[in-house]
Image 1 (cartoon, rainbow, N blue to C red):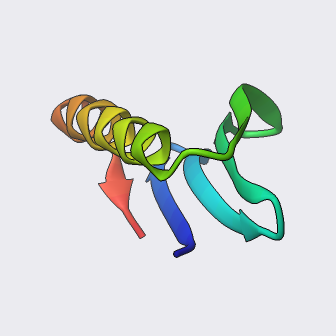
Image 2: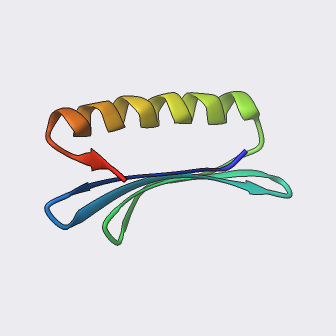
Length: 69
């Protein structure tokens, strides 16, 4: 499973990524050109927790006026 979710606000970009890799998954959260969170996961259950955290963060950003693209 891969995930690429992006929110925008006033020229800024907040991005959530889950990338399939041969040895597991790369999980990243970025804002503009800065990496906020980067982890390699081998356990899918940890990836699921990361995705739930992404959902909560996206919800908070949307409440602040960010839009999903």
